[in-house]
Amino acid sequence: MCRQIGGRGAAAAVAGVSDDMLRRYIRGDSKPTFEVMAKLARAAGVSLDWVATGEGDGIGGGDQAQRDATQPQLCIDTLGNPVDLEEFVFIPRYNVKVAAGHGQAITDEAPKHTMAFRRYWIENYLHAAPADLSVLSVKGDSLQGVLNDRDVILIDRSQTSGAAGLYVLRIDGDVIVKTLQRLPDGILEVSSANPAYKPFTVNMAKPPSDFAIIGRVVWFGRQV
Image (cartoon, rainbow, N blue to C red):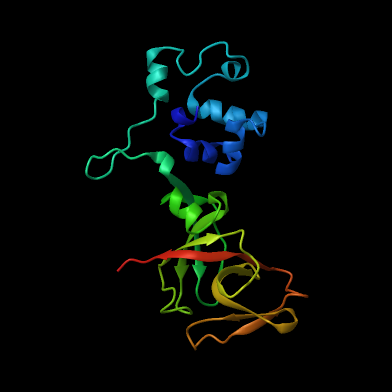
C-alpha cells in the first residue's frame, strides 16, 4: 500500500505515525491499530476487507478507473529526471511566526503546507526522527545576524534540554526564538544577539507556569 500512497514517507504521514513505526509495521515487529489501517486503506484506494482477509478488491482489483486513481504519480525534477519520493521526508510548516523579539502569540497552529528534506540528511547528519521536526518562520530582529526576519527554521522538538544553542520557547502564550545557556543552580539564561534586547534568566527548578522549551533550531534557510 505504501507504493500506492506515494512512498513510505507519505504513508507514515497519512497514518499519523513515525517512519520508524511504519517500518516496524512492515517488518511485523508491531501490529498497527484499526485506525491506522483504515487511514492507509483509504489513502491507497483499497478495501478494509482486502486488508483484513485478502478477499475483495485489492490493489490489483476493481475497475480500471479505480486502479488508475490509486496509481502513484511519476515525480520528476526540473530536468525531467525521475525522483524517488522514498528518498525524501515531508516536514509540516506551521503558520506560526516565531518572534525573534518580545514574542508573538500563537493564533494558528495548523500546518499550511510541507517542506521536503532528503531523508539521508535528516537521519545521518541531523540524527533526527522526521516525526519530531517542524518548520516555522522567524519574525523580528532580536537575533539579527544569527537569525533574521523572515528566515525559515527547522526545529527538533525532541531536543528540550536547554543545552547551549538556539531554541524556540513558549513564554506566557508567546512563541520566541532565543539563545539558551545553562548556568549553575538550575538557572537558564535566555539571550539575544541584538543588544537592544536584554537577557533574562529562568529558574528551571521553579519555571513560570506557561514556560516551555519547544525545540532546538537545527537548520535555517534564508532568501538572499
